Length: 342
Image (cartoon, rainbow, N blue to C red; front, top):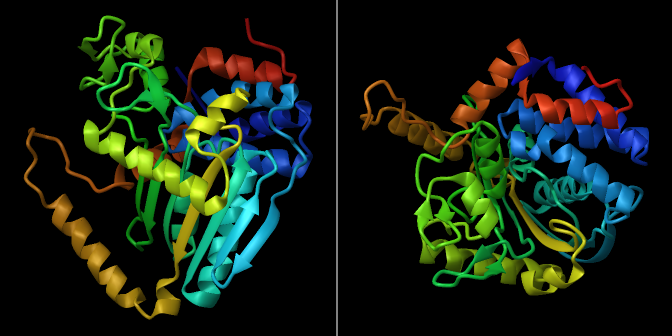
């Protein structure tokens, strides 16, 4: 592992995307979101995801120049077709539209269909919170997790994002429907480490903390066991139904990489427009103080709210450089047309 200055990271990723066929402006925005993911410590959906995204661009699974198209609007609700353009750019457009609708109506709801991988979903929660808005968003995915009690994969991981603005540090939850996402399994395996808690089953059907064994079996553990299984099913149904898009069982038939053709929902609330901004800050500040004041179960360990550790990681990486996997960094440098270090 090495540390790379943030701007160097973003610039290198942007060059890789331009070489893969993106316009300079779109490459820059996409690179910023990838670099910020790694800067926040979500390496699996930042630098580590760049080679796969370049592969999807070159194969034509992601249309570099596609723009989201409006399907219909009814009051504060809008449906968009992503036309399989870059998932980050589609999700950013959907977030901006939801923000605009919320500013007008107090709430904005955008349903996005036929899009591609949004990379780190939490990025759009941070984006909305930076603009003083509350967000709830989720996506469906291709099958990558067994339903509770099953051994074959028929559920998507369907990440859920919830974000609340706060002057002292936004509260942002970004969670997969499995105990650990495949991205977390990858980064843990690359570090040669074990998971702190069982994250799935090995090929013999035994619960394990070994990330490589879980990746091989594809039997990741739903968070909350049957509860996570049930929640992912409903998130899938609602994303597809509200966007008039594809559900997991239909995305599976596309077979063009992760999340190609997926459906997403963006709900945004404007506390100022709703007249509840002052009360919201009182509640969220009280919650943060109350949680931070918890008695730790382990000596020397701090109890935090969602997003608190992310902000600390971001500040460290901005000041001292972003941690990168050396092999992946060399691969991305090569994709950017730079000579690989020997």
